[in-house]
Image (cartoon, rainbow, N blue to C red):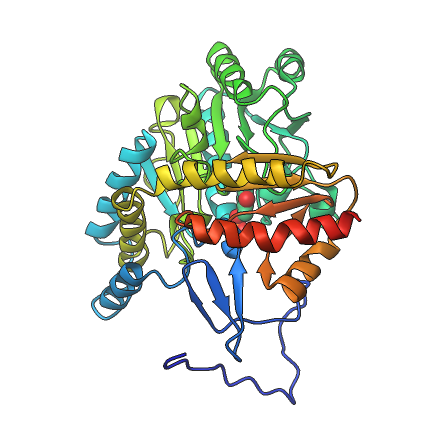
Amino acid sequence: MNNITLAPVQTDQPSHLMPVFSRQPISFVRGRGSYLYTEDGTEYLDALTGIAVCGLGHAHPVLAEVIAEQAATLIHTSNIYEVPWQTAAAQKLAEVSGMEEIFFSNSGAESNEGAIKIARKFGHLQGIANPKIVVADHSFHGRTLATLSATGNKKVQEGFAPLVDGFIRVPFGDVEAIEEAAINHPDIVAILVEPIQGEGGVNTAPQGFSYLEDIRAICNQHNWLMMLDEVQTGNGRTGQYFAYQHTNIVPDVLTTAKGLGNGFPIGAVMTQGRGVGVLTAGNHGSTYSGTHLGSRIVYTVIDLIQKENIMSNVNEIGTYLVDQFRIQLAAQNVIVRGFGMMIGIELPKDCGELVNIARDEHHLIINVTSGNVVRLLPALNMNRQQADDLLQRLVPAIQKFLG
Ligand SMILES: *Cc1c(COP(=O)(O)O)cnc(C)c1O
C-alpha cells in the first residue's frame, strides 16, 4: 500500500452518523480494478462495485488522473455560466443513448424526480389538472418523497405518509393491467418502469423485453410518455449502453445515475420524442447540475467505455459467468438470470446470510436482494481470470449454504 491517508476517526467518541444504514462490520481503505483492500492489506474480490456504480473498477488510473487534473483546474462555477464540459458530456451521452435533451442531476432519485416533473408538466400542457403516472409492483425508484411514492415496496414507504399522489400501480409485466388502467384513468400521462428490476430481484418482465415494446405501443396509442428508469441498468451494465437498446424502441424519458460517474455522484434525466421541450427555463435546476468536474467525469467514463471495448467484454464475460453458474450449480435448485454484468442467482430459500459467509470465508463482496436472490454487479471490465476467481469463491459458498 502506498500513501493512504487514513481517516482520523475518534474511536472513543460516538460516530454521530444518523443510523439509517445497516452496515457490515468491515471497511476498505483502497481499491484497484475488481479488488478492494482493508487496512491490513487483505484482498477482497468485489462483485458488487458499490451497487453497479464503479463499472470501470476502483481507482481507474485514467479517471483518477482526469479527476485530479480537473479538481486542480476548476470544479464548479454554477449554471449561471456556460459549462463546456457539461455540453461535451451531454453530446457524448446523447450519442450513446439516442436521447435529445439532457439534464444532469446528482443521484438516481433526483433523476427520477426530474422524470416525474416532466410527466406532470406534460399533462398540464394538455390541460390535465391531476396527471397520473403508471408504476410497477416491486419497483425501486429512490428515497425522496416522490420517488419512494413511485416505488413498489411498502418497506420503503412505511412511516412517510402522506405519500405523493398521482401514481397508479400495476403488476410488473402485466400489459392488460396497463390497458385497464388506461380505460379507468383518462388522466394518465406517463408510465415509469425499470427494464430489469434491480432491487426487485434482477427480473425482466416474464415475457422479457417485449414488455417494453408493448409499453411503447400503449404510450403511442394514448399519447403517454414512456419513461424508463435505467439508474442501475444503464451505462453498459447489461451489454448495451442502455437496456432498452436490446430492443428497437426508444423511451421518451430516460433516467440514469449509478455507473454514469463511476463513483462520482451524478445522474441524468434525458428526453426525446414527445418528452422534448416540456421543461423550459425556470422549471427545473440544481446547484450542482453538471459541474465542470462531474461533467468531465461523465465524458471520460463514456469515452473509456467506448475506447476500452467495455461492452463486448460485458457480453463475453457476462455470458461466461451465467453459463458457468448454470453448469456448476446444476445440482442445486437455483435459477440464474443474467443480462451482461447484471446477474441474479435465485435460491430456493432466503439467503441474506450468504453475504457474510462470502465476505468472511471467501473474501468476496456480493449482495442479496429480494430475500433470496444473490445479486452480482461486477466491474464491466472484469477479465476471464477474475471471473474464474469469482466462480471459485461463490460456487462453493452457495453449494455449502444449500447443503
Ligand atoms: C439505485 C436506484 C435508484 C436510486 O438511486 P440513488 O442514486 O440512490 O438515488 C433509483 N432507481 C433504480 C432502478 C436504482 O437501482
